[in-house]
Amino acid sequence: MSRSAKKLIVSIGLAGAAVALVCLAVTARSFRSIESARLPDAAIRYEPQSMPFTLTRRRPPTTGPSIRVAVIGGMTFTGFWDELAGRYEQQSGVRVDLIATGEKNDIADVFRKGGVDVITMHSSDTIINLVAEGLAMDPQPWMRNDLVIVGPPSDPARIAGMTDAAAALKKIAATKSPFVVQSSLGSQEVLLNILGPNQIIFDPAQLTVMFDDRTRSVLAVAGQKHAYTLVGRIPFRSGKIPNSGLVMMVQGDERLRRPFIMEIANPARVPGARVAEARRFAAYCRSPGTQQWIAGFGRGKIDDLPLFFPVYVPAEPAAAGVPPK
Image 1 (cartoon, rainbow, N blue to C red):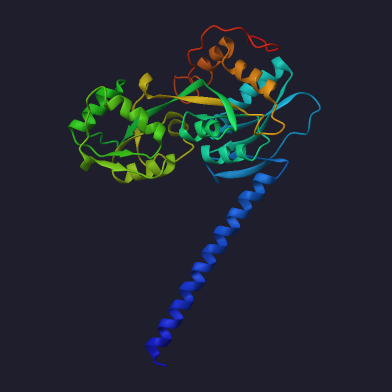
Image 2: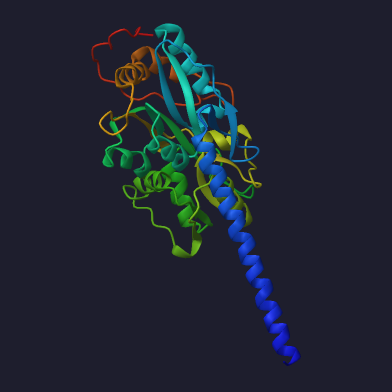
């Protein structure tokens, strides 16, 4: 056998070993994720500054009434959810057990496994699909967060300090300044709902369209390209993720807000779903007293705005057994 043939065989063997190691690593990681979801006494918690997920112990079992919830990570790392749940527990006597918190796809997967009565995240196909699959029901908006426009310190479009998102985007388009579009459908919808009515057209050459909607990745690409982009105000302002050299440009426009949806488990598909308690909790979150509290929560924590924003709630009878505030 020639020396070149031997080298080729050795190379193929090494490549095969490398592929095997990668497959083993991916498989092991998948099994760890699956086993974590099966743990009866653990909750998945989002930790923006460290690993995407860590495990924390649940509270001791209770013999009293309780509901089990899966919550998008932004509500928990800000302290908002603990405050909301605490208020409800004190006023209703019903305990709120956090089963899962993190990115939308992860908490949706936990919800699909059962054992969760309420799920809440941004309005998206991810949460509406739970209704389409028959696993959840009664989708309803109950509060909103907001996006901001960030960009390089050089600010080639001269938009820093503006509060009119449409006017700012028009200047970005007119100056052909680089702009990064993330893959999040919610973020894209906010963007398109401003561009379309205001007849703003970007030059394709100035755009970078990503297939990743993680804030850290979006900011990293925008920083590398000295580009503008849309990003959630809370993760950017809070400092929980690197800003990649970008600075705040535009905030405060109501057109940059996105709703959060709350759904409850469908008892026809989710055995043991605590529907009555879940409905009372959802009604509490949409009650005038809670909406007023949301409007002031966290004001001054990262800027002079509240962390989240209330939604319009039509007058309706109070849910039985739930205090108005």
